[in-house]
Image (cartoon, rainbow, N blue to C red):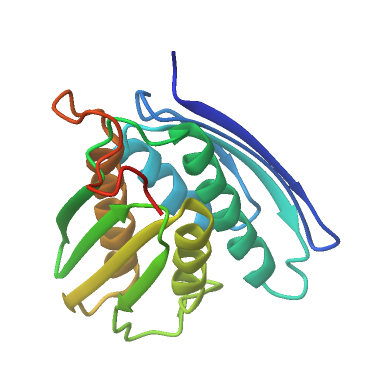
Length: 196
């Protein structure tokens, strides 16, 4: 049975439709009206081998904050729904990804205990028209709605675009490893017998 989910979210600020398939081929169709976010989601899909479709619009005439955060919420909800009771998943994973002069290390625990640690010094305020502070907002929303503990550490990097791209690629690789089915895991991967 495929692990997949479709999520819809409509508020006074945003209108989002998102579908996710965990055992995918890295295919994506992304349209959020925020070009840099589209780029990050497409490479997240490709490097995690997730199939991901996102159609989103929002009050970007105000700024990108609401749309970016709500897409993070929807992506997290899709992961949580796709995973069901999380039986048999690997749960923990780590990925380290270089992007030219930048290096991003991302550790995840898919445990229904959300938390974000974000150590990512960025030397620019914007990449094009995208406020780089929204990366942390996206990841916090994703962490909370997916129930994932995420630690992001960027020890060095001078180009904000490269650094953020490395973070999204590392997150993709870590999430792919964490949600994979490990045949050695019987039930949920916790000595408590439940996750959360």
